Image (cartoon, rainbow, N blue to C red; front, side, top):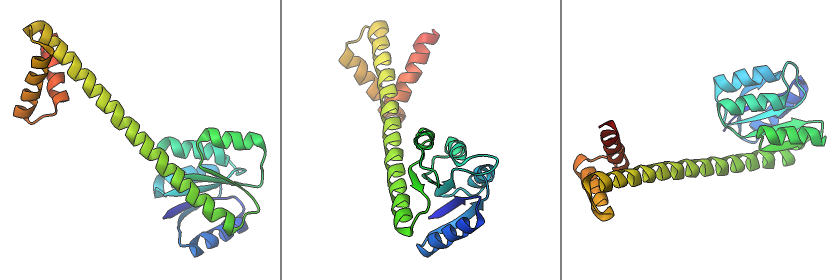
Length: 189
């Protein structure tokens, strides 16, 4: 697993790198500020990012927003500040974990694993939602095409569907593609 670390304090960044590498992670990039973190995330394509909140040029929460806008990855925020306002901003940005310094290996590693698991769940839900949306759109096309066949060809609903299904089988194309072509033909005439 490839990680990006963004921490403006060199000693903490080096300690964090050592801890992560000892735990078996590959640190593919280290940033000293939020803008550099965004650039390195774009360039290196890490699997997960650990970002400090208070950094020069761009804070970690804003950097997280920008990284997530380009490519959804799990992000863990690491900070010396536990104020509710920062936590709320981090949640709104879409981060998956929030750790307050000083941290221990026994805190960080479970936060990384939890962030990875939550990210995987969210990606699976998004994929399922996309799949359901596609199925619904296809179903609407088929229903519309059936309605046009029923109206224009004076067919029963069953016969209209049978005609669409047969055209799909003969053409080797999904029934939604056949329905879309039929709709275009009827509405174009």
